[in-house]
Image 1 (cartoon, one colour):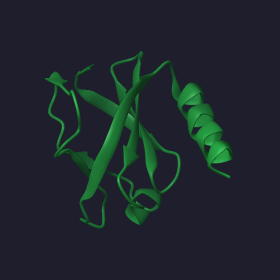
Image 2: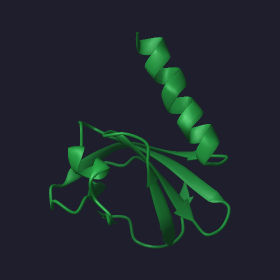
Image 3: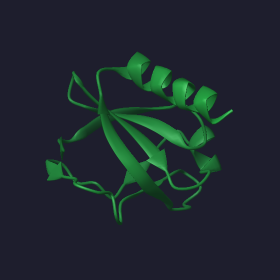
Image 4: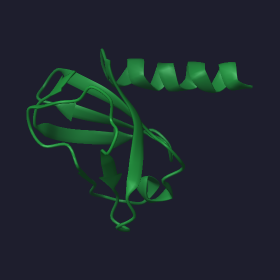
Length: 96
């Protein structure tokens, strides 16, 4: 999967966020563990550089404002933000 320059993000919960690349590319990021700083941060950093090809996110991470590194467990291309939120909710329902 090719990820261009990250142009924005939205936080879903303490394990999921949506990265925007350009105007129409969206990626659902799931962290390996809870990352409570996602809910409070106004800004995040990632280890993903622009135009990088990601096969498996073995060493990628997000860094919320609190400075704690949260390892990324998976990155999935999604159609848009609504699709990402629906996927997270569907998985949450399946887990219960």
